[in-house]
Amino acid sequence: MKRIFNKQMLVAAIAVIVGLGVTDAFAQKRKPVIRKKRTTVTKKVVVPVYSVPSGTVMRTRLNSKLSSKTSTEGSTFTATVTEPVYSNNGVVVIPVGSTVTGRVDSVQKARKGGKPGTIDVSFTSVRLPNGTTRAINGSLTDLDTKDGKSDNEGSASGDKMKHRKLIFIGGGGAGGALLGAAIGGGKGALIGGIIGGVGGLITETQTKGEDVDVKSGTEFGVYVNQSVSLPKFNEATVRP
Image (cartoon, rainbow, N blue to C red):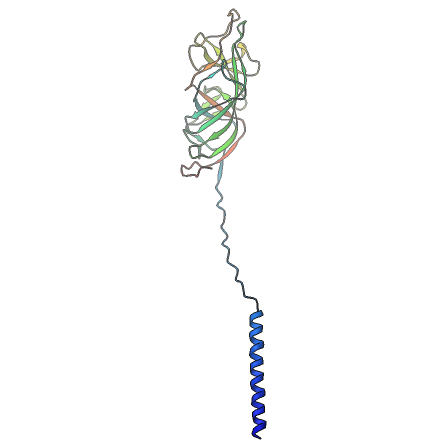
């Protein structure tokens, strides 16, 4: 009886040992549980933009001299915005001190027969003091009451129906620059006031016309041909 009991105890002990071995082997084969890290979804902040309508005239001041003697087609120049430009709902989007980049599209030196020099330009971009830059489609215009009407917010609005693309045209004994309509050209197209030096109308009796000398500091308008969208100006905007 005692021998049978010992055998049963031995069998039970062996079973326990075998069971522990199987359990341990199973535990070793089990793959560790990998917990995925939680990802935080950051919502993008949508910055509202405001429209500067076509027909707006930006008042600017030339930063360097332009001359039909030295300027070349494709060269660039800059002008500084002198009055803030507002969106169509009264938000300042282009402040004073912004830089407008212009491009010389064509140059004609003064010629014999009283032909004055001319410089045709366009404006391609504006850069704000905080570094924000936008492409623009702008053309040269004057700031008189015909093509550029000042409003009470400091910017100027052009007359879309009467607006004509202008060029710089030479005139006057001191080489002062006049504004002339690009369409038609020549002396018959002079419509603007004198913007530099002493002016005078070109006459056929002159042996040679005057070259264009647009002095640094000359003020003129940049006519916005297509509307442009910009955020409200913020000095703290990070530069790109």
